Image 1 (cartoon, rainbow, N blue to C red):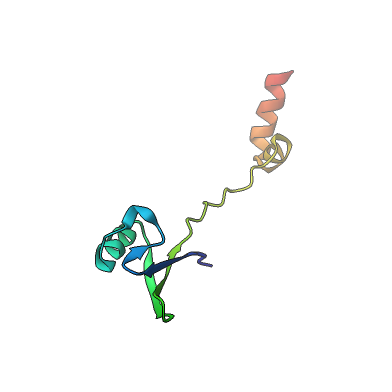
Image 2: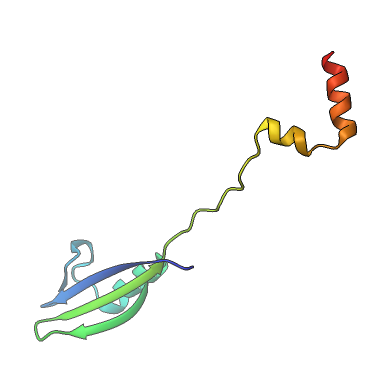
Length: 90
């Protein structure tokens, strides 16, 4: 199942809540965030400024396959392989 992370930004009085984007237009800010994988999903005006709601997929770790113990691996080998292994150990 896809998992998401969310981010909310505010723009009030011509400045962003994130100082590194002060003085930039909303289009410039959204372009930068889009290149980081963020997708704008909603914008709301609350009377004092705008709230921008963004989301992006969370990177999922690849599931590793369970490893068999040596004993289980030997049990699943063919009988001929087990005989050879036993002869070599005698």
